[in-house]
Image 1 (cartoon, rainbow, N blue to C red):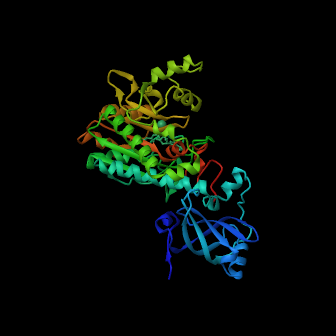
Image 2 (cartoon, protein in one colour):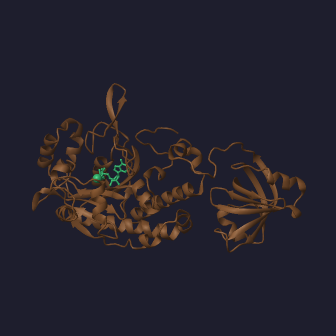
Image 3 (cartoon, rainbow, N blue to C red):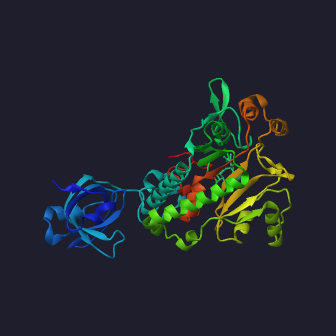
Length: 431
Ligand code: 4AD
Ligand code: MG
C-alpha cells in the first residue's frame, strides 16, 4: 500500500509514489493533460495527469473533476523549482470520494456579504487558510513566551455578575432568575489569580456589545490578559514590547509561505524590534494639534487620531498616562500627577490601531472604594475584588492584547472580519 503524506511534507518524498487525501481547488485541462490544483489543509500542490500515461478511464475521471470535489490521488513526487511548494505530483490514479456540484465560491470576484454568508466554505481558500495558520502560530508564540517566563495560565469565567470595561458595552443574558453578562475582560479575576500564583495569564473569548461598525471592532474577540504581582507600570511595558517583538519573530520564522500568500510587506515586520518608542498622552495631543487635528486635552483618541500618531513612527508606539477621567475605574493614578493614570495603549504601525491596553492597578482599598462610588458601580458585586486590597495588597500590573487586531496587523488585512474563523459582527450572527 502506498503511504499517505500531507502536502506540506511532499518535499521530503521526492521520487517516491505516495497518496494525498484532499480536495480539488482548481483545474485546467486540454485534450492531453489535466493540471489539478490540490489542497489538503496543510498546503497546495499541482498534480499533473497526462493522458498518455494513465488509462482512459482515469483520464476521463480527472477531466470530469469539479471544484471542491474530495479525492484521493496517487502519484510520484517530482522536484519543481517554479512551484511555491517546490514540488509537483505526477498522477497515476485518482479516486473520487465525493463529486461536488455547483460550489458557490467560484474563482470570480464575490462581494463581502456573499463571502461572509459562506464563511464556512470561504475558509477553504488559500488566503483564508494562510490567515488562520498565522493566527494559530501567533497563539503558539504568545503561549511559549509567557510559559517560558513563569506565567501560569488561569481561566476566568465567561458568565459574570458585573462589568470590567464600563457598563455601556455589556452583553446581557439571563442566569436563571438573575441578570448576568458575558465577560468583557478576564482582568479582575486575573488580579485575584496573580495574588495566588504571581504571574498569570488568561486567553479566551471576550464580548463587547459595541454598536460600532468599524474595521477593528468585533462583538466577540479573543484576548490574552497577563497579570503580574509586584510589577510596576514600567516593568509591564517591558514585558509587552518583548512579547510583541517575540510574536513577530516567530511568525517571520514559521509562516514564510503564508505571509507570501498574503503578499505581506516583510520589511515592515522586520522593523519591529524592542524597545518601542513611548510618548505621553500630553505629547500625543501636542503632536495631533500640530498636525491640525481639533482635539483638546481630556478627550479620547478616535481611529483617525491613532492613525495620525503612528504616521510618526515605524514601530509600535506606547501612549502613556491618559487622563484619569477617560480610563477605567481600576487604574492607578500617577502619584506625581493624579489627573493621569499609570496606563498605556500600544498602537500598531500602519494604522492598525490599539492592540494592547494595560495599566498598573489601584492597590489602595480606600481609593478603590472612592472609585466605585464615582463610577456608580454596585459595591456588593465587587466585594470580592475589594478583598484583594484588604488582604496582602501589592503593586501589580497587567494588560490585554487583542488577538484579532494583532492578526490583522501582522497579516496586513483591511478588516478584522478575516482574522477569526467565524466573525461575530454588529449585523452578523450567521454562520
Ligand atoms: O483596552 P481594553 O478594553 O482593555 C481591557 O479590556 C483590559 N481589562 C485589559 C487588561 O488590562 N487585562 O481591551 C484590550 C484590547 C485592545 O487593545 C484591543 O486590542 C482589543 O482588546 N479589543 C478589541 N478587539 C476587537 N474588537 C473589539 N471590540 C475590541 N475591544 C478591545
Ligand atoms: Mg483600550
